[in-house]
Image (cartoon, rainbow, N blue to C red):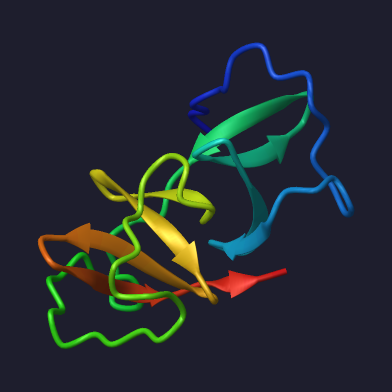
Length: 114
């Protein structure tokens, strides 16, 4: 297996560690400071959600979330967990992925929270 290891990671992920756990490709990953971490043996791997049928990277201007005000701007300090998705970053909002896109948020699918 080819690992993309996250360097110098002192935090131990697991149940109750304080980071959102997500079901991903048959295992659990943890959202940590804009990264998707997977505990693997004695190290932590960097993972990302791929573009798939359940998590498409499409523009969805008709999406009306209702989970935040339309004036809300997603970004590094917006209060939503950042999650790597394909070649960009989405934000986790009420169990689904948001990507800022002009004057709206795209809906990039649901994720299974643990």
